[in-house]
Amino acid sequence: MPREVKRVAVLCSNEVRDGLHMMVASHRIYNEGFSVTTFHDRLHELADWFFPHTFQKYPSIEKLQEVLADYDMLILQHDSSERTKQLKKWHREGMLAPLSVFYPLYHKRVHPPLERLDRVFDQRCSMVENVALAVSSLLNIYYHSKNNGLCPPLGLEHRKHRKRVLIQSHPLFEEKFTKISQAIQNFGFEVQFLPENPELCLSEYAALIYESGYLVGIESSLTHLASNLQIPTLLVLSRRALRLWIPGWLKSSIVTPPRWLPKTFGKLLHVNRIVNGFKQLAMADLSLSES
Image 1 (cartoon, rainbow, N blue to C red):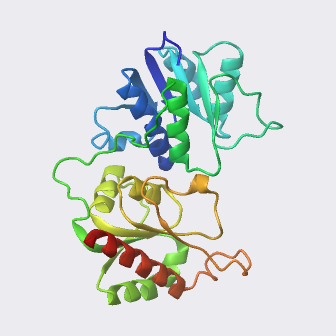
Image 2: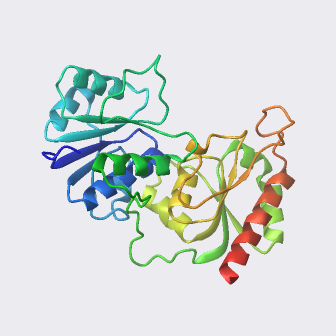
Image 3: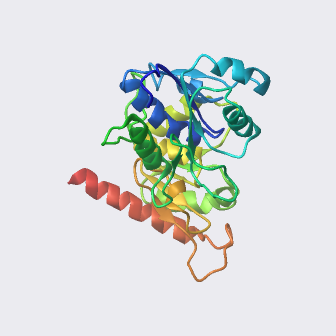
């Protein structure tokens, strides 16, 4: 990172999981003594969990260049949004501070030539691991950390309700919720449906997940948040996924349709396959806690 850099803006993609991943960069840069602002439209809802980090919602594209003029360096999580296209255009025109682009996926025929500060992710590693490696490389530090600074506020107890299993809202689970719920309850657990409510604050989701024993869900911001909070998670996938997209803090257990079946999501992920996956997850967790 250039010596003259004092203030850094970390520019995240829109999803909450993107913000959680890029907070690995923000937290590492902050700990190295730089002033950091993380741009994301919802992470401020977790301000109490990310104290003392600074967050800012994205301004309109018309005002974005003016806002970013206060920073000595920008770190951009690449995506296909108009905002990213405009930022790269301003960079080419010399209208921005030094820009480091983090590419989850990079294709020579689609993307511009790489520059010195750009980083391309390894698809064999999780997003979290890749961000940690990329920011360590920028800082010229040989070791890396996946710590993004997420820390619960006082008064919360990790896995306080150890027998509570959260099942994420999704058509797959809604159609089969009764059978899945009853089977899990037969193992001695209580089950709670976890709806994705756009009006619910992220801190409320975080508190609920943090004090629960387990989460069952698809790959989403909530399963990444659970991994970040060290909550054992059963990840239900429609097909084998790149390691890049799998939650990268606490390792998840994964259920997929049998390899020999066509790639159909809900119909082929039978209740028994999900229930057996949860049973194995719970047994492994119990064995770990007793060791």
